[in-house]
Image (cartoon, rainbow, N blue to C red):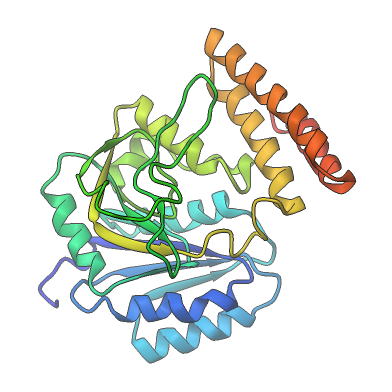
Length: 296
């Protein structure tokens, strides 16, 4: 371990009142005994209770860590940018963006570096399960340009080996993604206007536009406590930001007939949601759509 490059791998994770998931997250980090790394922990919590939890684990496990506490919730996009910039300034070659509501097996970092070193691609993702199950959350994903949808391959399916072939995908969320440092120099950082949701969609879209494609590595497996930190897809928070940011993404990135198609699909489906939602949910959706005018 001591002979390995100490600047090969940086981790960036953003916290927001994450105490309930940190035990399992640090337990997973403790299993990484064959690969040196430094983790940049960006804490957007309103109190410093997670700081105490993190410091206890950092000292107990002797983790190389840099903890950054923000005095406000600056969002996932800006939080990631803070960590990415620190990692780039310190000369790290590869950056692993990862949620802290995930768990993973021993020495996955070493396996990830080995597999990525034998590939010409610069972005890498594992197979991801719904936590505690054999049900797939994502075995790669696909960006649909005519609707701006990003369906996950295999979502909800029992894993029977049907997605065990390594291949190229044109989209994946960044909840566990290894990215070569050179990609950020080419593509730039996350668009902080998103705050949360679709910031990774925007970043990956720009990567693919610049021919930085994603390699899916099914030999690597991660478990995800989906929406553990945002209240789920039907929370008022999620409804607001998911709708605001999807519309902003379309307006920012789509052109011509493709933009027209995405806009038509977006507003037609919003009408269906308005009919389905309760009063507070409808208000969050409408407020999110209207808020786009302040994002330009």
